[in-house]
Image (cartoon, rainbow, N blue to C red; front, top):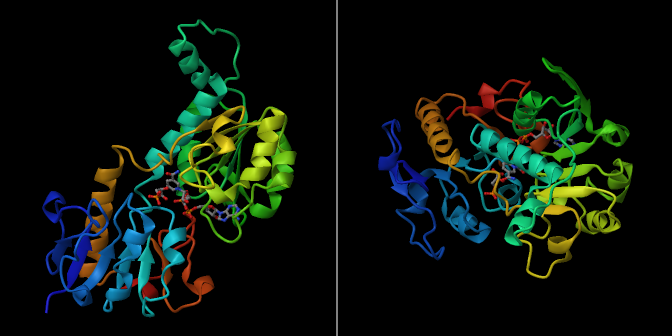
Length: 343
Ligand SMILES: NC(=O)c1ccc[n+]([C@@H]2O[C@H](COP(=O)([O-])OP(=O)(O)OC[C@H]3O[C@@H](n4cnc5c(N)ncnc54)[C@H](O)[C@@H]3O)[C@@H](O)[C@H]2O)c1
Ligand SMILES: O=C(O)[C@H](O)COP(=O)(O)O
């Protein structure tokens, strides 16, 4: 009997896929109603379609009775982890670490620079054929705080360095030291905020980060500081942010919002000092080549019974035991666990 792998990219467009599996294309279709490409009971690895509504992405799950791996093409898996109740124990959920760093960090820099230098004002002025010159804040000489120092946070720092920032402070779940210096634990974040001119959020959405940026967090930010969110919308309390924006005390550049998509008429659209992009960190020309490289590498490992990359959790096990911080988990420092990751 064939072991099927469901791919949301045409398999003939991915060079180097290992032999031993039958590759079937399934991306949910234009309307999300696409028929399954084969018997779901034969699917051993389900690669979740990218940029597809959640109900479509989770539709196959309860029929995939012999599944061994769920591979997302997103870095964030918050929506998938909430939908695994029908999955048997022992299935590994792997994320797309390695795919989104360059693109998302690039957008974080683009939003930071655009917000500080006033690009949205220039676009508005250009539409009115108005010459709107004057002094603007530069990124040079600013103190930047990165909250969520995983691969995306580190890629953001890589791109900040050439802009001659004064200092970068880093916050992750737990304290550690990197070649660049100290990464503070999340408990330190409130004490770091008063020094930051720019605060960039790049955490996953978890119970601990939902609402992390609340009224107290925002109140600790400097007058005139910029908040940049490329993490997930609910990491920020939208009501509390709106209150600060309307007072004109801080500004914000948001790639993600809560609610998302932001509906027409929502007050965040027109709040003073806010720049909004429609969740564009991942989808760029950088996505496809990196996604293909990840899939070839992961499937080669799976075919050879080698440890998989980016294992976020194994169903039926205590997340505290299975979430590793490292190539198989969330922070670059710690090792993967071959014992739990083989095919
Ligand atoms: N805007 C976009 O299009 C886009 C694209 C890709 C990823 N993302 C988001 O970025 C997130 C981060 O991606 P990654 O690959 O770097 O993830 P990651 O999970 O590997 O790393 C995230 C970092 O956040 C830290 N963290 C976790 N909880 C924290 C807390 N309570 N306080 C402070 N730090 C905390 C972790 O320790 C880790 O250092 C994703 O989970 C996703 O939600 C957004
Ligand atoms: O987490 C990611 O990788 C990007 O934010 C893309 O996520 P999405 O496809 O779930 O919006």
